[in-house]
Image 1 (cartoon, rainbow, N blue to C red):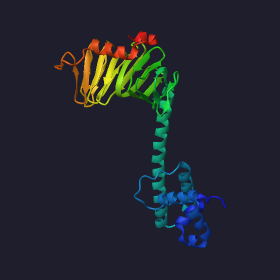
Image 2 (cartoon, rainbow, N blue to C red):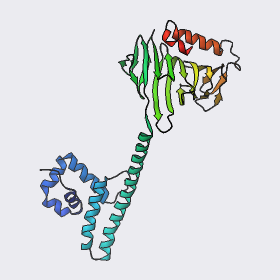
Image 3 (tube, rainbow, N blue to C red):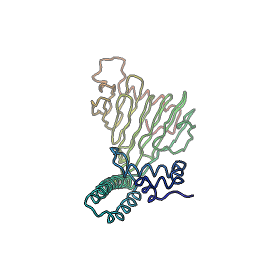
Image 4 (spheres, one colour):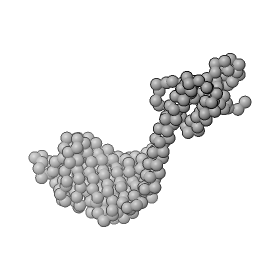
Length: 307
């Protein structure tokens, strides 16, 4: 026996005497998951209910409305007409709202898909043990949004996008790529990466029509092009701005616009400049950048361009 039609299911719901005459059909509903689900859904739609989460499919609504349209002429009294018309009105209103919501989601998804496309980065250097999610990363491998990069001890990684983005990362660094896409209409490229811990040097070409954001546990750094060094540990994020300008903000929303050649400390409560810091142990911008560059770029002639 195949699946039960919507017409039979509706008749079972509305006519208890039909159920008694159709014991085999009732048993089929109990044993067949698909018919059982359809029966339950139709029962919630037809009978009064407070549940507003039911969003029937377009074909289900069409069949139910068609069924009611056919049986409505049979009821000649005003009372019977009211009893029939009220469920029809409710069903059609619910169907209209569901279809409108579905159409809105589809239009938004199509718009996003049409406007943007992926701009995957690439692993240009892999030294030591580097993992992409749970797999070992290979040189030349494409890196799409959603990948988690984990760099082991005595290891390093360089990732690029063409000639406009280069990011070098050192040992014990963890990077999560959350956004890497291009606006097909404007040609602007958007990058968003989360650096949980570790050290990086990042070069984003100011002439590359890009916008990037680097997030850390303490705040974020965003710019349309700059060269920076960053150290992230448990208590703070240190940022040295070698070239260009960036906006630095703490997780509590306090933000600072950087000055080229300066260093900053981001904590969850705020952003301070090395010029304003009273801590004599804080590195200034040139020291922070040079030390980070030395750690990451020693004996690597391919990375000379980022110094």
